[in-house]
Image 1 (cartoon, helix red, strand yellow):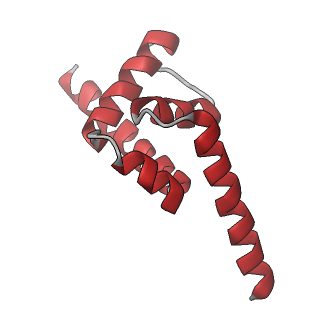
Image 2: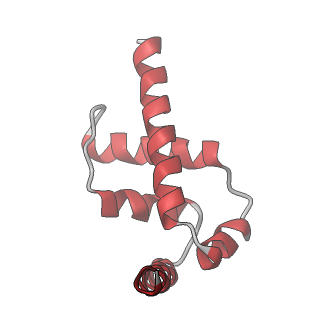
Length: 98
């Protein structure tokens, strides 16, 4: 049981880091840095929310995963979406210029 629990923590840690890296941009970094939240806390929060809603082997959509990250870091969902849209526009513009 302990190995199963540890494997779940590792999987959710990797997934959380991956999605935070996807979401991160200057605007979101400022929003995240304004709180005293930690990655460990984010992972524990996400695991508990997924288990509460979907059970031990929970499977949730990526967008819902992002919302759990925003909830943990107390990021306004509208502000986060706006920051992501700005990041996407900037990325597309840079791609066109290359």
